[in-house]
Image (tube, rainbow, N blue to C red; front, side, top):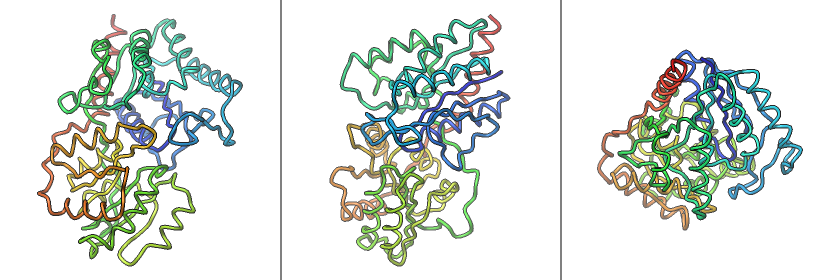
Length: 383
């Protein structure tokens, strides 16, 4: 069976990492996968055997997500939208998928309704019609306008056959961040968490007994890295090596600043594909609380301090970190008011606390999603 998977990231790399894990699981399950990539390419992303088709790329200008910029760093306009929508529809016509999978929409990415709604409507009219599914993380960002939230449910009911929620209702049900979830309960399937195991082992010695500080893609991680750099000398863990990982979206000037200021005992280097392997060896992880990083930390079972990204009304990471803190898996330092002193204190408190309990999260969500899609598509074709 053929899958067309629409993936659009705007800031950071978390959506791409999760989507790539799902694409790999789909190809391993025997699907022919085509990925329509709407964001800028993330070097090092492993899509497995999927065909990746780069649409005209777009990114957010900042954390507000109000201005979207094209490859020339110009705001996208009506002409750009028409060209990109045409390319996506041409890809749909070429691939003739058995399964059309859309990442996040309609529970986010509403700015891309201009291309997604026409594609979904055409797919629904096709004969034979593909199975249409949404891939969405466990927690959404809180929305202030209830009408917009209800409109998401309306769109899901009108255009989708399945909503694959990459989480566990026993940990946090979808309705905790999406109140109309009962309206679309017939569509929802929980896959468990998408936590891809490490495919690369770090060189001998790297990560062993270290404090690993990471910021994902790095687009919004500069202040955490600066705070960690200064916290090293203030912490009781100042005799162990601290390894600061600068994500690919961290501006080169900030990387140079951190590198120049790093004292003995602190390493500043680019984010690494063997990051999960470093966590499995480390003394402590300090990071934001994005979906993928949290899954890596849970799989490693290491002590953790989370500083959730919370700018511009973002609530998703704070909700996830607080939930895990309540279960004894981590300590949380709010992003507002982050200082080296507070971070150093949290590092010391985390080291003084009992080891985190063994994670009970199901982390094979990518494989489960592939099975669910196969079974649903097979049932549709048999009918």
